[in-house]
Image (tube, rainbow, N blue to C red; front, side, top):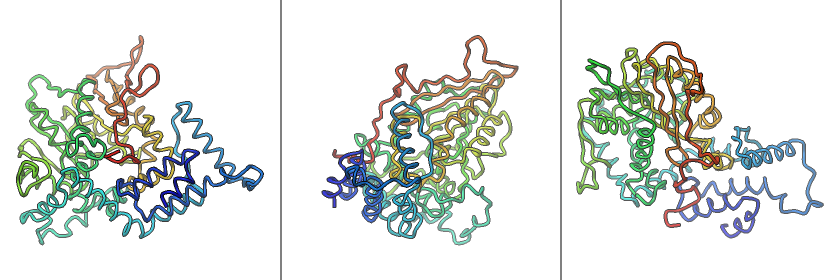
Length: 463
C-alpha cells in the first residue's frame, strides 16, 4: 500500500499526504490511524486522479467541479501571494467520506482509541510515565472522583452551549474526569513530539517561549501605591499547569486565581495542589509527571471566564493561554470584555495562542484533509482561524480606550504572544503617528519573525 501510494501521489503536492500516510503505517505519527488510510487515500485519489490522464481523455468538468478547481487555484494563489486563506466549505466525495468517518462510531470506537494509544506510546518513549502517573492519580482515596457521595454531582450544572461540544476526541469534551486526568499528560506528550530534542521537557520549552516573548513585550505585574492585594487571574486554567507556573514566576502576587468551566478539571487541579507530589522522573516509584509545590496563594475555581463575578479593577494581570482557539469569536470577545473589566488601571492582558497567519499554520490549514482531522478535535478551530483579525481588532478597540496599548510578537514559528495594557483614564486618540497596536510578528521582508522548529506532522522523531 505504501509503495502504491508513493507511486500514485508523487506529483502535484500529494507527496505531503504520502509521507503522513507512510509515517502512520510505520507507527510514527498519531495524527492518522491505519483504518483511515483507505478513506484518505481514496479522497486524495478522487480529487487528483484526473491530473494524471492526458487532457484528451479527461472527462469534462461539471460546474460544481469547475468551481472547486477554481477554489483550489485561488487558495494556491493566496499562498503564493501571502494572502491569508479563508475557510472555505469542504466539499467533494472524498471530503464527504472523510467527514462521515469522523462523525461515525468508527471515529469514536476505533480511530480515537488508536490515536490515544499512539499518544501514550509517544509519552512513554520520551520518559513520560503516562500509565503509572494516571493510575496513581486515579487511585487517590480522598479524591472527589472516588467519593461515592459526590458521584454525578456535576450533572445538574448549567454550561454554555458551545462548551458542551466534543473536544480533543473526548465525547463529553472537557466535562469528564478522564479528560481531566489526561490533560497534563497529553500536554507533556505533545510537547515531546513537537520538540523532540528536549524529550519530556519539550512542553517546558514550548511554554518558556511564550513567557520569554511576553517579557520582551513588557509583561509585568503592576502594583498600585498602597496596594495590598496583587492578583493574577488565569482564564481557562484547566488543571492548573499555567496557574502554577505563574505563581512560581511572580512572587509579588498575593493571589493567583485559576478559573475554568470544567469542575472536573478543577477537582484534579485542587487535588494535585493538596497532594504536592514529586515527579516520578526524580526517582520516586509513584507520583505525578512533574513536581508540584503546595502554594496557598493559588486558588482554582469553577466558573465562566466570560462572567467571573470578580470585582472590577481588581486584577493586575489576566492570562489567557491557548484558550481562544477553543472559543467561538463572539465568546472570545466577551472574555476580552471581562478581562478589561476586572483589570486595574495599568493592568495587563497576556495572550498566548496559535497564529494562523504564520506560514506554518497557514500551509497546514490549506491541506484540507489534514486540517479536517485537526478540526475533528477542535470544533471552533476554523472560526478562530478566520476570526483572528477580527478578535485582534476588537482587543485594540477595547484596550485602546483611555490611553491603553497592544503589542504582539511571534513566540514560536506558529504561535504569537500578546500584551494589552489598560490605560489610566482620560480620552485618547491615535494621533501624531502613535499606534495603539504594535505588531512585531513579521520581519521587514515579510517573513515570520520566528523559525518553525516544531516537528512536522509527517516527520518522525528519528527522521
